[in-house]
Image (cartoon, rainbow, N blue to C red; front, side, top):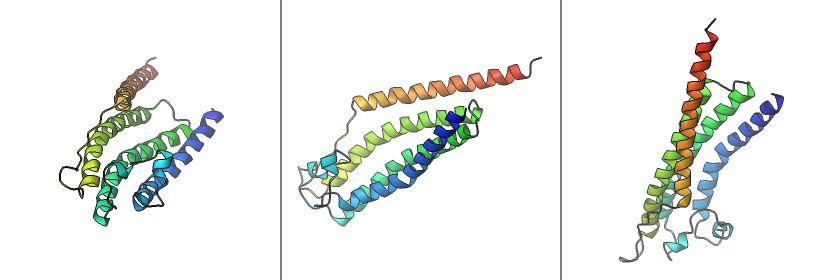
Length: 179
């Protein structure tokens, strides 16, 4: 059990670090996107703004893109808060509890929401980044790919597993009261 507690503590600390760094990273991205300081396309990270426009991003466009990105980022931040709570429970050796089953259910729904919101986000972001282009060169791009389908399958699996965990907890509770 000590291994689980140690690993849980490390993962909780990682998730707490990410809870701070993810929004910082999103803000940083939109500060440098499309500038000579932008190394994100070289790393394959984030949105390559050059595919939507040849124009320099205006302040209003950056602000719109940042706002959209931060709105989408709220979903994984919520998931990180739930993961932090889950691993705090594991640190306290509270493993098979109703609260943990509920957290798994919330994480599954969060992943489902993130996939759907990501599709909408892609469309809104393409429109925002290409808004200053000439008429006829503006984009509205909606994308649903294999990773999205895999994400949906994983979300539904997590939700089903959470239901199994809740049922297992209820059966264990009933059995604990049986003499």
